[in-house]
Length: 404
Image 1 (cartoon, rainbow, N blue to C red):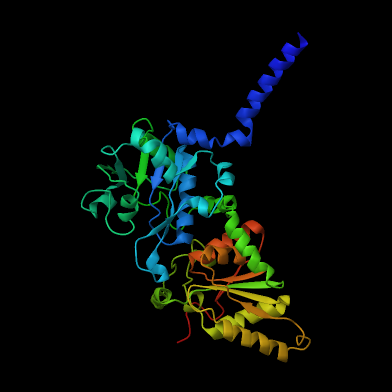
Image 2 (image 1 turned 30 degrees about the vertical axis):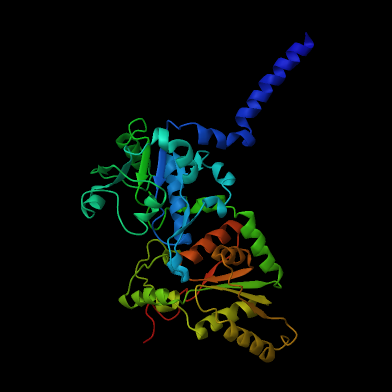
């Protein structure tokens, strides 16, 4: 008799464990096989490169969790023309870069687009019944429909075998900043899940810059092992303390920085320096693109202050490696007590820029670019790690305008 009661108690405990254990809690299999009656969020990560697409993901994650829907995570779009190659876009599954498990601790209803299309699309979201969602303003400048053409807005969907049959256009004032409860409720009331099971947006349901609440979700991102392992190999080649630099100086970036001549208060990710409300501060050229002389001057301050032994350079074009190594060698000759101090400049130029990101985040010190979303990613990563970030040209020392 005692054994019967013990077996019954054990069965109950096992059931409770199965419901509450993280091992069972993610229920990846259930998400893949069972339709979520609370609905789904799909979107195209159609603004910018990797760093921007991660920001779109963080904003969409906040949006999906607040609305209580499953987030369908799109792949990362790798544009071939940005690396000098011809050909179609290349898509990398989100899990090629990040582990989804920590993210499910915040929102446990997440699947990839690949999983959604394989397990749900034909039965629950069949061709002939697929709606694209957008505002009236967006439809008005697109011939009265939501689905758009061109790369990536059209190619992203067509490359995944998705065609839209009609547009669902909202005329009411609906806002993506659902951190405000009234905005979230309006979405739920306008598009209840039983009538609109799949909300498919032509771009991410977020805004730029993303909400501070979404920025904080960066703490959930954990690099895939292959990226961390490659980054750790680079770090082991360098003696600490390490100063990492992010240099943007390619042709496209040079054109972007011409906007500083027009006295803009915000350009791209400059809010990370000037703040979300910049007041009378204008983005300067020195904040956007740096000469060899500026990089050397600001780098030497950090190196001398912290007795750094290694400088790691990540860049989209020109690493200034030879110039910076010469500056480090001169420092050893001119500064008393530095003659035996080891100083090396390293530029690995890995195939995946995400490895540069990893190294920059793990470095002891980092100087980034105020305007760059790439630097913004590294800053968020360093914030999570409790590491300080400095920026070229910031704070502004010579007033709001560059000298002529």
